Image (cartoon, rainbow over all chains, first blue to last red; front, side, top):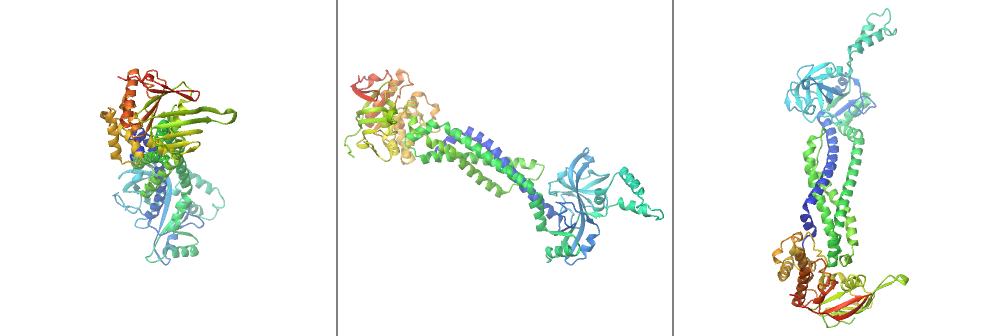
Length: 400
Length: 239
């Protein structure tokens, strides 16, 4: 027996391909949305992996440093380093801000500025160009996503930093590319005020009799000095010694240091289950709507195409074609449309995904699931048309 | 059920009533008709006379309210009883030719004809061979690979006749097959139908009110208000 569906598709292939192309773009959007979500999850995991830490020590009762703000003193790391099972501990700061690239016409890029100590956790894992930081100030390593190149000069607050190294896939949980600078510079950048604000603060302090007591020489100067320097960091990254369970070290830190300590698994949970949960739900809603819209489009197209063949269907039924054969023809056409749509959608997604500003991760497993869903949706969408076809009276072919 | 040994198609006392009670309409009233194998008869009548209803009963598309019908010696209807599988009966034992050819546009000429044997379970190769034989007989074999849209109206009608003959049915029902054609082409179609009836020993019933072809029938059934009257036709030879 010949394939009636196949012949019909071949006969009007232009219509099928064009319709499939339109459907494919919609499927492409659906696959991209799934890729955006996967990209967000992957960004979060990459952020943790690239930090090179086993533990994140942050301010007590906070879920910092990525999900909430956290501030701890920069000498805390010494106490942590002294704990049993700790191999390395290092201060880090994180600050999301607009960084101006003076070498690219002052173009601004939203970035996460990371302050780190070279050779310790927090340092970018690898470079794709240039070198690591060797000077204590005013050098930077930038993610290629910032658009910066070696030798570019980035303006962070009042200072300029020369890009000496480039790295890749170093992004914040929000997808912003990172710029790494020396810790001291980053600490300053977090709290650095402009000159007018410093003068105003000093005048305000001098006018406060409690801070400017007569007969206490040096008090005002000491207070002013403390106000213009920053001894805080956002977190201490800890690498535990081989064979030591990170959770046991975290337990000690929580108990004895009055700080919060998160293991890798806990930090993943914070980033994925909490930080991007709302965005994931948003994407989930989009996906659900897109699936419904795709189903409606396939149902409408197949239904319209079937109505256009009512006379042929009546003739087929009159000459003894089984209902099963007619239903199978419509089902196969719907599936064929879905197949064309999926292939177009997959190609389109692969082509346009790299152009997205945030990382779009296209997982083969998602493509397989997507294909299954498209086929099921097309099969369900064809039921309306099949119902209409089965209702056709063979007598319609006779007489008029 | 009484099976007759006679072939062709026979109906006796066939009636069809639509609706019930005060709104009931008797579309057919005690219709009798016999068509022998190889014979082509005309069924003529004005609009609303019951032609289409009779054709639908003969084509096993609707069931009569009363009466008997036998086809190729087999009882199809008998006073409210009917054979269980009318779909298979239509596929294997009745050929249809319509006013418009109603060919399947997405199949080529050969497959339009071969579709019926294929639906009946014959292998594709055998079905296509049978289709080509019929297309040859109808002088359209040279268009066997063409798409339906590439054929002229006359060629399409010949292909539809080939399709009607594909399963070698004992009867063909032709519903105004010459209506859209000019005199010359209409007569050509009638010549083909007569030739096929003789060649394949098929009984052909042609529903028509086309004055051009009425003189070609040897027997005509006039239908009016659901009743038929048989009369001899001119049986004019078609040149």
